[in-house]
Amino acid sequence: MSKLKNFLLQTLQKISPINLVIFSILIVAALFVRLHGINEYAFNDDELWHLVVSSQNNLLDLLKFNFENEVHPPLSFIIWHFALKISHNDLWLRMIGIIPGILLIPSIYVFGRNYIGRTAGHFLALFFAFGAMPLGISVTIRAYAMMMLALTWAAIFAHKFRQKKKRKYLINYFLCCFAAIELNHAALFTVSAL
Image (cartoon, rainbow, N blue to C red):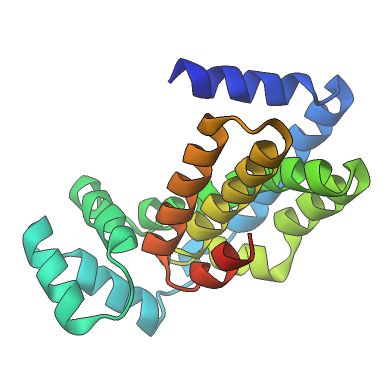
């Protein structure tokens, strides 16, 4: 855990104080946009099915039900299974997607900055804060925001590995790829391109 903490601190140190203030405001605004009126939004059929799969009695039943009735990998169902053990509150269940959606904003900034430059990082962060697609994927009971977060960090670690050739970046890359694929098979397309 201390290695992750050091990595995050090093990443934050590369961001100027004014950018930290701007990102803080951006994240608060993005959170407001995602939460405003969320209680008026009813679950769609896919989200309800996701909850049916996730609400099995135990993990073994969930895995059996998943493999018999679902084409998606089980990781997102497992995450929501444990979330349902805590609460059935709609907002709580949506926070499982909203939190990774919010974490995508600084993550995509780091990705854009590393690959293209600071301006690209700012543009990507702004898009992931208020763009229709990132908003949509982060307020649904689906694995899309978690998958995007894992893929973003896989790309960041792949870039770091190409620069520094350290095994820890390669291991983190593979772990992020594995998580992304286990959240949704659509991640295979991005992973194969990395």
